[in-house]
Amino acid sequence: MNRLSVNVNKIAVLRNSRGGAEPDVVRVAEACLDAGAHGITVHPRPDGRHIRADDVYALAALTAARGVEFNIEGNPFAPPRPGYPGLRILCEQTRPAQVTLVPDGDGQLTSDHGFDFAAELERLRPMVAGFTALGCRVSLFADAACDIGAAAATGADRIELYTGPWADAFAAGTPDTVLPAFAETARRARAAGLGVNAGHDLSQRNLAAFVAALGGVDEVSIGHALISEALYQGLEVTVRRYLAILAAAR
Image 1 (cartoon, rainbow, N blue to C red):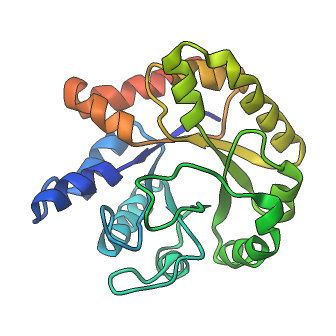
Image 2 (image 1 turned 60 degrees about the horizontal axis):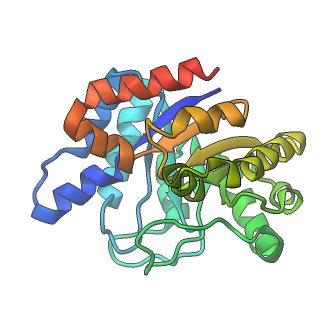
């Protein structure tokens, strides 16, 4: 419970803005794991705006050597294109511990909503089955108050709660306007046999209250805030602070 997977996409954004190999995504991932992070997350997009296929292969080798979890996020319906072999092929080649399916389009700046599980049920079922056959645990990006029955019917193992609305409400000083819906969705997910992950805009400021209200989570995936905070605090210190928050919430 309360495991931390560090999303290193932002390191790739910085590298790609200049070209070349610095900052080194693998070196940063190594530093996060050295500091105690439980795993590494990436979200390769078809346009190659940050994490690329070669990064996925390198990070898969690192996490396998370290014996930690690798989580690949992506849209299972996005077709392959030059430089992007598709989510299924990437998972076939790297066999991550977890694949998180996300309904984002090319034009989205970042993932900003979960699946409509009732509407997408028949499309998701074969996708989930295919990734499960590869030995991957399958998590589905989900909004608060989503249709848990339909989510469970896909055959997935977990949901990942999209926590953008929580971060916005927390920053506005109105956390109680959204927190009950997240807590109830987590409760219903567990009752349906689904694990509960969470991610998006979680930070050192808002993480503890969220995890406590949900009675813990299986995993949080944190990238943007963690890397931003690390610019001021240092990477090792920042990772350890997140781990302390999660440990205290157990």
